[in-house]
Amino acid sequence: MDTTSKKLFKKILVANRSEIAIRVMNACRTLGINSVAVYSEADAESKHRFAADESVPIGPPAPRESYLNIDKLIEVARQCGADAIHPGYGFLAENPAFADRCEKEGIVFIGPSAAAIRLLGNKVESRIRMGDAGVPLIPGMKASATDIKVYEKAAKEAGYPVIIKAAAGGGGKGMRIVESRDQLGPSLEAARRESLNAFNDDTVYLEKYIVNPRHVEFQVLADHHGKTVHVFERECSIQRRHQKIVEETPSVALSPDLRGRMGADAVKVAQAAGYTNAGTVEFLLDDTGHYYFLEMNTRIQVEHPVTELVTGSDLVIEQIRIAAGLELSPHFESLTQRGHAIECRIYAEDGENSFMPSTGTILHYSEPSGPGIRVDSGITKGSQITIDYDPIMAKLIVHAPDRDLAIRKMIEALNNYKILGVKTSKRFMIDVLRHPEFKAGRTFTNFIEKHLSERKTDMSSYKELAAAAATAAAVTSSESPAATGQSRSVRPTPWQLLGNMQIGDSIHE
Image (cartoon, helix red, strand yellow):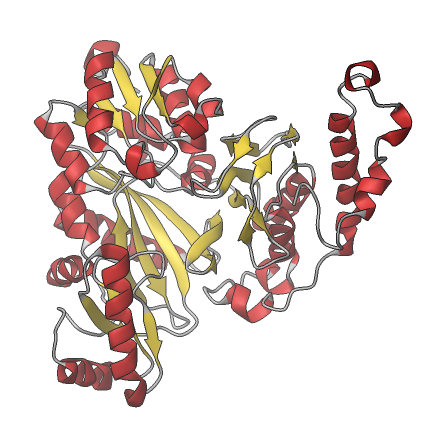
């Protein structure tokens, strides 16, 4: 790997927060590049602030006044002398205006061009481009329309059920599944309204709804010298409300031949878009082995660590190298998949109560450790979890020689991952991994709705309830009786604290 400092950057501003900001800063440190953290008032004591060589405040907690404030970020970059900006994922990572502004200011945007982001962010335009390039598409409309008769004709040709999608959409916004013609009109209007509210754009289109699909994506890398490669697949079918929560690689559904064909088409997608840097091409795979282009994400993905563990590569370092104008590292042309990796996203959500967001202070934090266990975390003891940002706190990733061992290792690691102070989705993840259908590899995008929609609370959580209560009691007891004027007898015991909690409720989960 060529990491000669004069060919790379002197200083990179990381325009993000939490675990992904720390991940980028670690890559900078490996390359000998200084990093700059930005932080809002809510993140004044955040872990990512202290992981960088420098840190600069950028405003109030509200993202629009801090992490989404392009003018402020550019101002900070210029003041601190950063010659590049890494956007991470989320926030401004897929904002073409931000990439344009960086270019205008002479600051390297570590990602694709604004033109590529703009093209691939529009599902209608990208669908047309990929169809022209010969990439398999889901049957349906090639462009949007205003006349309902166009949608009726497209639905009839594709065959019901169909799905209406927002052209500028994501995260399930502006999306409606239509089972029959009489549902088409109302669903179309509802999708348009939701798309307008979410994206300020009511453009929608229609395509065939693939029943019981798998969500399989391919990591791609492309340099500025004409070289584009794929770095194998990730299966991301375990989703809740169209959001991935468990990812793994390799996919049990792919044969070597199918993997080769899908990988070749992923490369074709990147080339058709004039893409450079790291990106992810997403496909839907049906139960007959046919696959269809879904979209391309123009950033590093949340789930990139599973690819790194099975290939022994560093995707963030490669992002930085490519952005600096270097050729793709030679080893990316000869990578192989070794073993199996699984990632679980750890959210500050109540897994026993419809995944309602949970806020509070982390009273105790302890990560699992051992061979093949990786934690990408944005929190530590004392961290404040607020409602201002996405509830993902950390990612737990494991690697093992095969899938069965990886599942077992992940369950053990989750049990040994202690986060006391807020509720988490950890117990829900364990239930997913223990489910017979997951173990059998029958993972489809409707897995949670089909198998865990009426999930019962696991009573084994009582042991952790007691631990959480004991921790809370220890915190309560941290001040001396003389200082507080209390006698020791009036302090609640761990079991008294536990008795005040409801079944399935805890400080930690």
